[in-house]
Image (cartoon, rainbow, N blue to C red; front, top):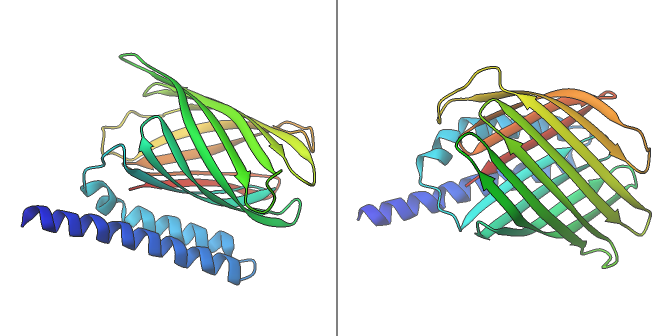
Length: 235
């Protein structure tokens, strides 16, 4: 009986999160100029649901992740599933504002290397994707991170070959945690991000804040009057 209740609770939580995500995905596309507000509201709802998300054991392999990313060039909705702790597979819906294009990428990420010490962790990943709109549109690259409880750093080098243009996107992040919280606390990072793509060929450096608790993470920053947003929920 206990196992039956746990299984029903598990799938009810997944169903609830997925349906909220789909609802806001539709609203963002159908209500002009309102997508930023819809996604910020979605973030708040997920934060209120974070206790539900954290209350069940998370088993890997078998975990799923929903992400939303937005900056001045594009916004994307990503879902991926991890059959193993070594890799994930999923799909990404992209609204490319720079090239005025919308498409879906099939994506995969592979954990190339991980090194743990008593005080730090380092990860290096390979990533790739192919567009369902044009099989010649592909992306591939490498990204990684290193962190302690106090310090964080990351890098990303992504190459995108598209029908419109081939270009690269480079990114570096540095951050510090102003306080050290316990496992279930709200954690805060004060961050600095540097981004460059070969289209504009200019480095942009700006601050942002990262908050995470349990299975929920959000990053918020602003550059050139555009929001830079990234949030993640795992279940």
